[in-house]
Amino acid sequence: MTGPGSYAAVDLGASSGRVMVGRVGPDSLELTEAHRFPNRPVRVPEGLRWDVLALYSGMLTGLGAAGPVDSVGIDSWAVDYGLLDADGALLGNPVHYRDTRTEGVAEKLWATLPATDLYARTGLQYAPFNTLYQLAAARSDAQFARAGRLLLIPDLLSYWLTGEQGTELTNASTTQLIDPRTRDWSYEVADRAGVDLGLFAPLRRPGDPAGLLRPEVLDETGLAGPVPVTAVGSHDTASAVAAVPADGERFAYICTGTWSLAGLELAAPVLTEESRAANFTNELGLDGTVRYLRNIMGLWLLQECLRAWDDPDLGGLLRDAATGPALRSVVDAQDTAFLAPGRMPERIAEACRVSGQPVPRTPAETTRCILDSLALAHRRAVADAQRLAGHPVDTVYVVGGGVRNDLLCQLTADACGLPVVAGPAEAAALGNVLVQARAHGRVGDLADMRRLLARTQPLARYAPRGDTARWAAAASRLATR
Image (cartoon, rainbow, N blue to C red; front, top):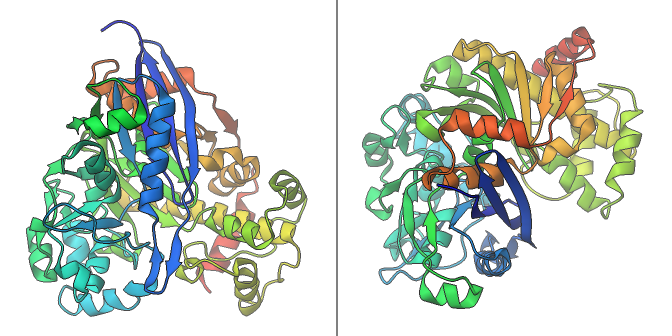
């Protein structure tokens, strides 16, 4: 196949969505933004909900601005879903994973399906918002009783584009209903948890065809058909890890944004009790790989603080934070106490006060506390992953929005004691594009995709500054609290 191909990547994050257009040739990879739009959850009397209709509208506007494309792919955050009735109509706005409905649900489910058994069969870390716990919480709802189909968020939007239903595997692996060894549903877990797997559409793999844009969509976007939709790594982390520009296997990755996802790419899951106790997850990636990683609260901590401070100049804030004392105060960036929105500066200050540390008094001090804390969490995750998987690494690759934060990248190199390669920033969109391009014959296997990324994308490198003893001491102090 000659000449570059053009692919639209719909990439939906927890705070914004975008339609990016990637042009892929034998030795070229260019990404441009067609349209960006906000993703603002809405709090209604029954709880926190996603405004999925606004997301769909933003996606259509973006596809209209994208121009002629050879394919469309969709990726988004994980675990959340929409319910359809027997006629295929949406039964209400999807529940937001930060909604409080799953509080205490996991403990009740573990009485029937112990956490040790659950991990041995699915390899998924504990998070209170996992789809399995959401389903347990929804079981008594009238809306759930009417549901004939459950579609994860990217699959729901794909269905609206094409009229065809499917469940993409990398995202399905975050539901806690997939066996990472067979890469299929865990029928035993579903049976013991009382989940009807008939609610889910058939599984799809990255690269599978997902239908053609409906005539009504072509009319609204101005695209000339036929335009196929291609299943990609529809969990945005799966797409982002596919876009890690690594050479070989001795690397760790940190996908940064609202969350930090830090870990390794493996050939097989790690299902030991020690791994469960360390709260590592085994999610599925491209080409038979396993994303062995830990969820860290991520730049959500800073985003919420910026919102509380009425969005000050971030560049100036980071410059001030860089001049402050290192490791003066740190918090546990995995603590679910920071999961809910609101009053983040006060909650961070309280965590420091309770642990006997200096309380951050200014936005710059709070920002430095957050970034030091994230770097420490990155250090722990990278070190623990290597130990638990028996998989040593030489380099840490940072991808996603956090690559624009020079201070965070440098602190991560310092904390890990390893060189950091930062970039690309739009890793999820690039991984999305490259899976489409591969499905259409314009790029080769995963290694070929990564070589193309390394040749074409701007990357920054950070060397550790050698003060590893101080970071080790801070990590030890945090672990004993």
